[in-house]
Image 1 (cartoon, helix red, strand yellow):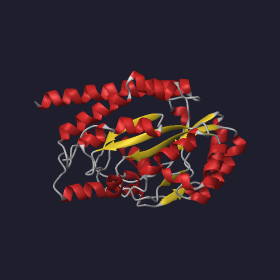
Image 2 (cartoon, helix red, strand yellow):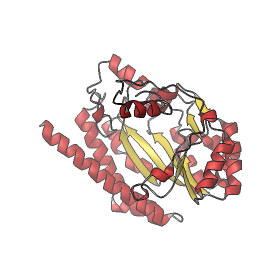
Image 3 (cartoon, one colour):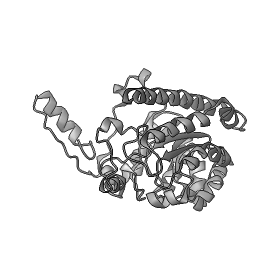
Length: 326
């Protein structure tokens, strides 16, 4: 199945029931605003999902990050649901907390500002995604906070300006701390994502990342290996250079290296993923991030401990794979 599943999933289910499934289904980008597809949450087994409901107001992203599957999937376009439909869905959820999964909610600044204004009367608390350039728009930032924002996932990716340029990421390393501080001043927790394996990375720069992360004040760090997902510019570039080493899609999970890095081996890259994850999630660093801060202590402590457990599972998986490859 390729493309959006809004229409092809129903087609597949009908074919499957009739024992006539096709080998391939290609989804088309439909009018998200007109579709207003609401998930049937009553079908979900509550014990198997987090208690916070998820909502998506808009899809796509206008940024052009080379490695990003969202950009490749949506072709650099942005599409949004009708605001009144989203607000109605949130009201019907009757939940104090919401998790927004919009991949790039501030791509359309005018929509984002009106949306955050519409959220304010609902008196909810929410977490979602955001790019670092919100630092430049004080009006949008203030509306985001007033609308109930308590947590943000932000893709910092790297502390190398060279790597940012390589990936066409619009971040500016020297502003990282200012961005984090700005959110912290308003009591917002930052989950920062970081990627290992850019051509500009060295062993030294990667292994220093835990100290840099602590310096800028990210509350919850998460690491992944640069993964050249199919149909992304990163995949096309590495394939043209003969550097793709696996087309077993099971390996494309962000913890296995599926290409030949420039300054170290694939095994070394996976080992560094384990190393920086373990270093970031020592008891000492968790204490400083989650307990000594003046807000969100218990929640941040729980999430940090959860990632500590997750990292140990990642390490166990990789070590098992390394032992098989000997």
